[in-house]
Image (cartoon, rainbow, N blue to C red; front, top):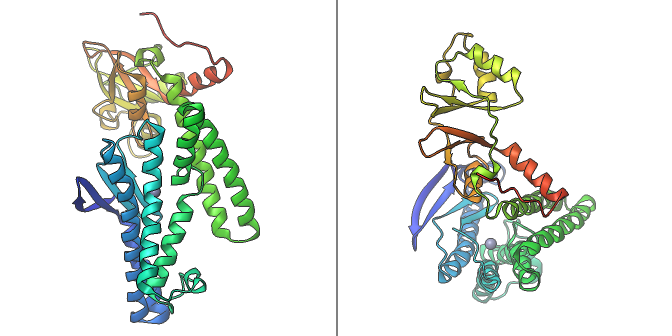
Length: 365
Ligand code: ZN
């Protein structure tokens, strides 16, 4: 994740802190300092740091369980909303997926139980007031850990409970259908949660929107991945592609933009090899600053993002995914342009699949 600082490595996993988390700590400290003085500020910051220590332990619950099944985790990042462990993959066996998902919340329950035993006389009413600085740090931490366990077990993606649900459904109806159904259940749950939020806690409404969007994304992602299984880049690329030469000017690029519905244009050198990619947004932005005659080479994205014709479409999707390239130049064995892979084509493939589920996209070459 960009804007993160690596603070160390634990058991082969880099522990990173996102810059917003540090800003969050500063904000917590500063607002407590202004309201209640230095003592309260220190206590609040200490509480948040300890709380995120527990979040990190939760993530390592997932990470270490996944490692037992041979799945590595290159990094874990702490954000103000919690931790994100980037597992290399989700174990395919539902039993393993279940164990990995449950391991995180289980860690919080163990921490809460230990704290309750250590603190001794924690009464339930005290544990509910985790945001009250007057009650003891240990009681607040115990309460927060119980909250973390329960919150993470909400049966909706991206919560651990969503994974638990998915694993249980996979055992009955197979992984692909399970994803669709788990996403639907999660969205239904988000509705109920949002409804409760409308009349009670506005925080619930916020969580509900978050869950709803994430569940929709997961379902879409899984549908897309199942639609492209077994396909190669050449089956999905656009073949009638407008291109532009490396020597062209901004003015010529504008003419081409207006003449075609394309948004991304491969910029080709003399040997028809992609030297860069011209993106509509970059072109419009450049027009405000540069004259018509300015060379295209200054505003294109270089080197051009390329994929070979025969590459697995699923892998190419990852390159096209969030934060990746807006389009991929498909190249043949000599490195010359053969087509363009765009998100629009993939969206069209999805529409065709939903209208005609048995449709095959295999092209004859
Ligand atoms: Zn978790």
